[in-house]
Length: 177
Image (cartoon, rainbow, N blue to C red; front, side):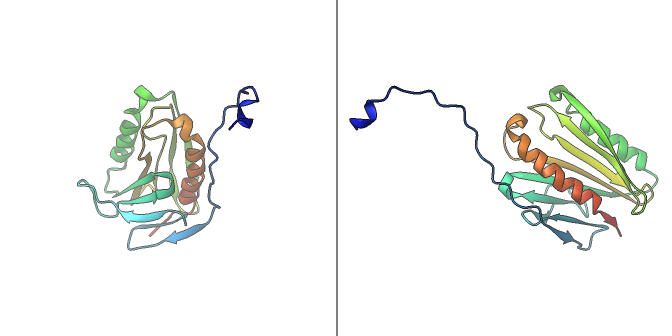
């Protein structure tokens, strides 16, 4: 105790938590759903249990990150424009807290996967990453990433970027049935 008091106090540099992110590895989701995709091995796919759930809705849970990707599927019956419009309305509800919304277009002619990814900036935005994909004739799938914490997306940025890569892989591996 006496030895520790001889040195004058020294300022310490700011420190940040070190995140130990898992290695990227994927497994295949192919249940009795109208779509299939690859998802990370550190995630699990579970049926959506909300009151408003519909057939073929599910959640990709990332328990190590306290995050969920909500996936909602709708069959198209001459109503694709309504689904796309609803997606834009849901994204626009985030505008008051958003600093910007960047749209990235998805076009995979070989597998008939088309859509838009919405990258939503802002530290208090509830969902910073949303998307929809469709084959434009029969299938429509919407996804939204949420964290089970109070939104502070500046602190969550490394995890959000990490999960974005996984979601982009899921979209690129998506196949309609």
